[in-house]
Image (cartoon, rainbow, N blue to C red):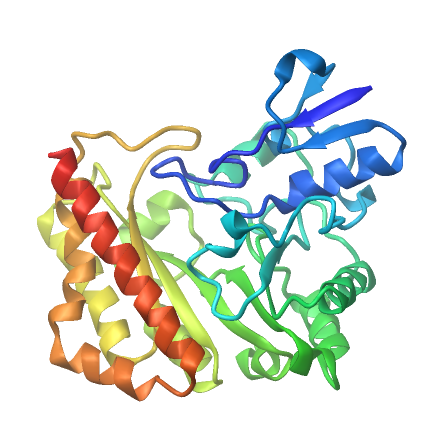
Length: 340
């Protein structure tokens, strides 16, 4: 069989608000599997008429996730500049991996992972040993940073064993990042294991919204958990959403203020906001969320925020990382201005 993997900025996206080139780890695992099986695989081609099957997203993958090999990053071109431009990388070259195919929590109403689980897809987590083999391969290839793009990184005994496997060498060779729920875990253990960037789905400051989204968290614990992660030496990144149809301006204001407070205190090092939408849909262009979205980024006008950013500068990579972040914010403002 001849397989074509046409690549695009939505291959690994969970939201469709804007295109972002993210190394599609799950697709790369599948492409590697097919190639290992002796199939003719074209990674990134575009001559559709020549191929028996075209694989655009992980919806097409018919092999259990935990039976797949880790990606052949040479074959799948993981060093290509399109992937290296991902904004949350600080050290280069960098790449994505996936310890699990879906979020272990799997209940948030807005998330595509929840949608997949409801349609019968099983949550599968790779063994720690297999993930460590992949990390060793990445180190051999010269990668300096790895971001795990599982919906939420596994916790509990799995996380403890993973961290223990990173101690004593690997944590000095490569920096780790991952998606996390705002929960009470041993953040110091994660920092000692080489983690740097933790992407937290905070979403809202309003408990009634978290309940409606079935987030399973407590709004009054958000500051505590972000402070714990920051105090452990990690670099927490917060994601927020705006434009919930059931919220009013005061509700929106509380979430914006929470975002600004966490950034000014240094409990979050970076943050981003998006407009709420249901799974597999694009945000309504008439949603009030587009009005509130720029207000999240207005924190840059605060002297307290700027002083905190200066305090966080410890190495050259910190400086270049913030420069890239400022450029992305500026580009977003320009895009919004021309869209009006």
